[in-house]
Length: 640
Image (tube, rainbow, N blue to C red; front, side):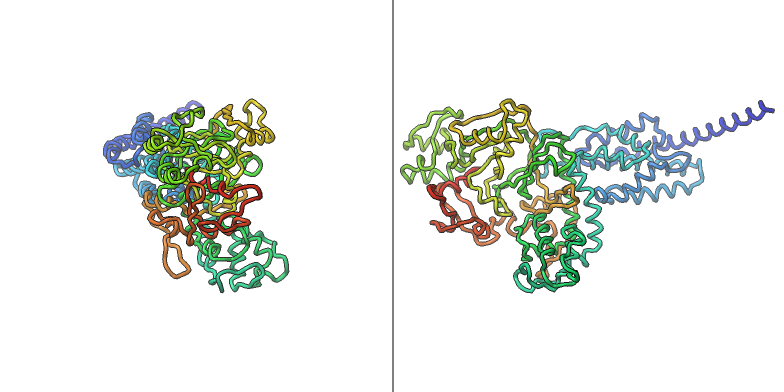
């Protein structure tokens, strides 16, 4: 009896295996036909990062057996992946690019067909190949980005690490947690993860856009602390939802509905202003009001565009320096696990918004530090800005600590400013340099960051310019507000005990000194108009160079319409009027400074930030400290 029961059981198992094999064989045959028909016509982005080749190899390694269905039913990983494709916005991507809805409908149609029919096998084969194709698209877009970064002018000598797409897709097909598997192909940078988390919150806020961002117009140009504003209750709610006004911070009972700009509301406005790169004064003025009434849909688009930029970056390990151009800020990471404890931060000055003066985006390495550097004047500045004064003013070279030299070495011998030598200087046969010292355009420290753009990273004698919230003043080079602290960070581990005291002594010593770093430090100069922090806050910046608008166009995205208070519709990502390449940098009527050498257009609002300002030949200039001339603060303007 037992033998008979065992025989029946084994027979049933054998028949089940034959049926399953037959089912798998029919779908496998259909997959083979589907690949022959559709693979040559499959559309991939350029470059495709090996996706087309992977589509064939994936099925070659499985003898064309289905990856995403068993016994005429979609597997759990298949259903999870389809859900992710349908909600690709969670990653800052466009669902229409991944066909999630069509795949869900296809799986439903295939499941409704009678098993083991030709149409049944064909539909499941179509589902399998299509889902594999979309999985390849998603993985490549999350890892490499959706466009060729070179089209944006981003110079990257190091490409993103290559992916074994075959292995990744097969891992997805067998994964118990598809979303976690996808995390492994995304950028490992902590700011990227924080920004992706912030996207979900801002999407929820965008669903309430009208209720949160429609504030009553200002009763006058600005409302100061203690003043009254009819929209103060709505303003409190607007600031509360983004964390700038923490719950329970109202100082007095009943203030929730008050029209007064009370101290708690002033503090919240200051937090908001700090996050948006505005002057931190607690005053509800036009610039702050413009940011407050910017729809959250605009912020969502900014986050989406900046997630794309992070995907272009190679995997770099700390220590790491990141300069964010539109934020005018530098981060020096000792670890990527958290911001607050081990990250050095400081303000920077970057290139003007005028065409030809932009600071470019690139990746390089910091290899050395130079204390009391020479400034080798770029030839275009020499010819356009300095030669006319050198020819016109006797003693100009000496007064500005400039030398004409032959050769590239710091030991080059100076030559006199004869007519012949000036002609050679104009022809590029000789060069101009400025001697080291406190009036040098590079300040007292230069950080060696070789790059194809000759962009320098250095200190500056014009320290008062860091008080401006919008610090786009240079020809393209990057000036740091705390060069001593950055030198301590860079020289950590370099022989010589480079503590703050020794660095201060080197900055003020008699000699030009170059110190090679023990290990080069990666430096990323990026353009991020949305930058998330671990406190859950997102720092938003204006589109200084119009790069968001450019990237939006490259991605084929429809601009998000932003409501202007004047009643005019305006593109959300459209750069401000003063930042468009066809116009100069003039947020207000500028004053042209032409002191010493070089020139820069300083907005009047910036002049007001300079303490002790006096009057000069061409407008307002900083008052001279006792025993010092006023020419040195402007030497920085000629550095690149």
